[in-house]
Image 1 (cartoon, rainbow, N blue to C red):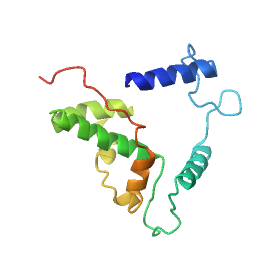
Image 2 (cartoon, rainbow, N blue to C red; image 1 turned 30 degrees about the vertical axis):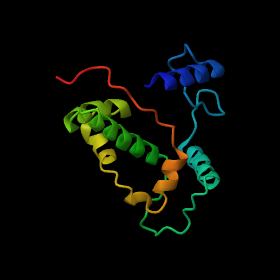
Image 3 (cartoon, rainbow, N blue to C red; image 1 turned 120 degrees about the horizontal axis):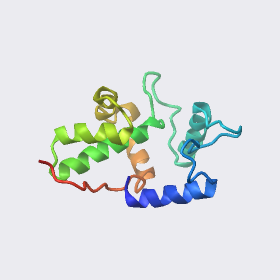
Image 4 (cartoon, one colour; image 1 turned 90 degrees about the vertical axis):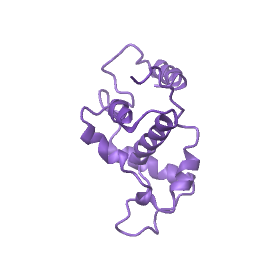
Length: 145
């Protein structure tokens, strides 16, 4: 993770009192020993989209629209662009991105590498503007052989 994100996460974990509890949930639920549900996260994300003035009501029934996984798609897209701009080959991306995303297999990462913006036609620019600055540039600390 980028140093700035590490600092934010440390403050967050200290505030929650989970800094030295490796089994603690990063996003604990209301009940002890539980975490936020997918339904809760989707509901909160819908509210965020409304606040960002991203209206998804008029999309076609086959269009997915903006969703939480768009953050992962955007992260992969920006990471690939940064690595390629730094002169690293796509093969290097294949090695780094599954690790970033917590995947054990490249096939799990493949779907994120195919993001084209078609899934959120018409709102991709608004979504990118809304997330501007959220994903920091990542420096590659080693040289490709």
